[in-house]
Length: 138
Image (cartoon, rainbow, N blue to C red; front, side, top):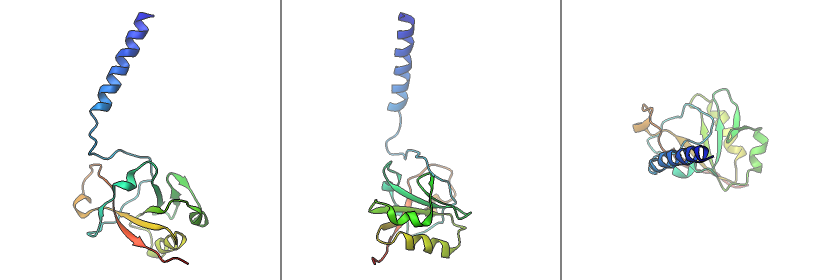
């Protein structure tokens, strides 16, 4: 019994040490759908988009639509409750498809997530960047 308790204590100690070494200034990875992000010189850092409770809408190159990691239909976007929606669209998506999704998000504050030009060629994990878009209300 002492052997098991000692091993459990040792495992807990190692896990605690590993968590304590994480750098709070670096972004945490959150589950999401990967896309080729467009680059914008107007982009500013959007740390809020990386929060666990952030609502992220993703449009893939194939035209698939997701909220978080769940596939959704275009019509369900109007039912989102979040006041701010972060949208990331693959750079290869036709512009008309992006506009169609933005129309479905009418009434929400929308931030288009992009890559920063200085971060476009790096493989390092970075904070999200984006451009705020104001959509008119009905």
